[in-house]
Amino acid sequence: MTDDLIRSTSRLFARSLALALLVVLGGCASGGGGGAAPSGGSDYQALYQRREYVKAYDAAAAAYATSSGRERDKAALTAGLASAALEKETDAQRWLKPLIQNPDSKISGTAGATLAMLAQRKSRHTEAVDLLTGAVDKLEGDDKARAAMFCGDSMQALGKGAQAREMYQRAQQAWVRDRDLRAQIDARLSTITTGTPNEGGSFTVQVGAFGDYQRAMAKAAALQPKASAAGLANPRVVRGTKDGKPIYMVRVGRYGTRADGERAKQRLGEDGVVMVASGE
Image (cartoon, rainbow, N blue to C red; front, side):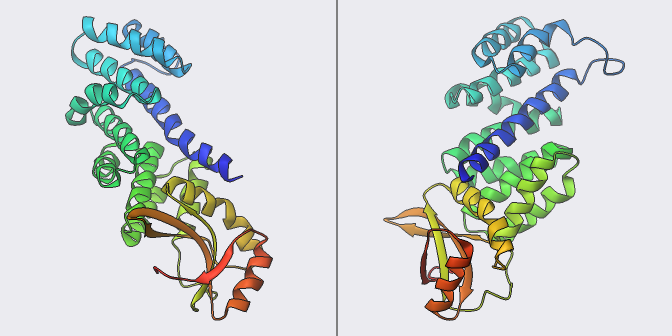
């Protein structure tokens, strides 16, 4: 279940970028939804939507060389998105960085958010926060909500829990219709909720420790329904260090005695260890 949530999290922003690309490329089309896409962008747009990223990149790069104005910007955006999908960060940076200052907020917001996700995957969370904060101000609807959610993730990874909570709340406010997205936002907020009756002792149940923040968040989200059904506190992600590197620990509850913690672990039904809640 945890691996499914990790894949869901990674797919979530990829899907948002695909949808954002449709909005950006279709933004100049006249009339209602039944009109054909402009011929200049239809090839690389269709290839990108079919996840044929190598072909989409080649088509977008060719279109960029022969177009101007907004059509040129859209081709650059598609080339950058395809590069990101292919995990070619250097190429993505080359195409997308100039677009961050683009006067079209959809293009600039999507470019910034894409670069932020590349930075986040490599744990460059300060860079990700800067880029995603700008994207949140430029995007709308569910795209804005996704950018805010992932911005909150990087804030949380930096140990800025209060700021992360505010950003998750902004994500909730911006959310429109994607139910998977809303579930992801709610799960994140639950991991940083404090003050439940179980939280007051020196011991906790630790069910995992990860070098990657997204995996820790996915584990916490996967455990949330089980913890709730067992009458336990929501799982939380606690940032610490090990051998000079960040580590993200998934913990459930606070208990006055080790025996109370052991009983909670049995109710949770997960492998874990009862330990002193150090680092909190």
